Length: 306
Image (tube, rainbow, N blue to C red; front, side):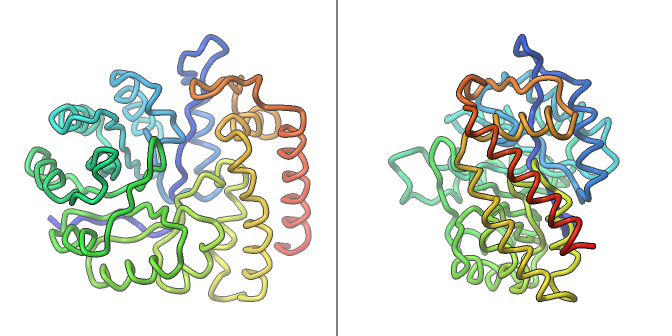
């Protein structure tokens, strides 16, 4: 079976929590609806933005199962957080049982810290052998707890198996992206950029879409860039410039600031609680940045994108 993932926008999902720190499924259902109304091609559940390193395996499985049951678009998921390969395989089997449309492998799980020079291919081969042959796979260069970029040779080797359909690229280097796109051309493996600054350039080189954290703030602006980049190049360039400036907020207490946005501006979340960091760290200045960015995004909608 040849894997396939549709081109477009694959937001990395937040996990809403109650003030007591439990998963808030009512808010999660509203979040799914918000993503879909704003142009999601599919949803990337159980990823770093979902705080998977702070969720139990049971919670990760239940999270994916809930998203899959309530979404009207395809759902892909990661969720393997252990260091031991056998433990990871067990986690991936459990996640697969929740019914996602593809399983996404976190590259830093496949190569322990301090041994980044080692190939991830032996681990990939073991995982492929252990999982159902009809389950499409993908890669995610998750930056936590450290970033392990996949080499072009490793990427091509995996593309040649026909099992891989999704690559969440976090190299943030348009030269490397171009090399990767050339290496996988003609295969089922498609590259989805996670970096806003290089997004427009990567679309022009043949990237399949976007899968970045900033869609948790203004997903509709990324939808417009995806729609207009080849037909309205001047508007696309201007929009790209604004989006790059906006994306600096990623460095300012994410994902709490995104949860604050979803609570106060979008009205989707009941609470901005995060397990990864205390809400108290979202300073008045950080909150004001969220509001100022929202006002600028509204200006774009009312002028450039009319």
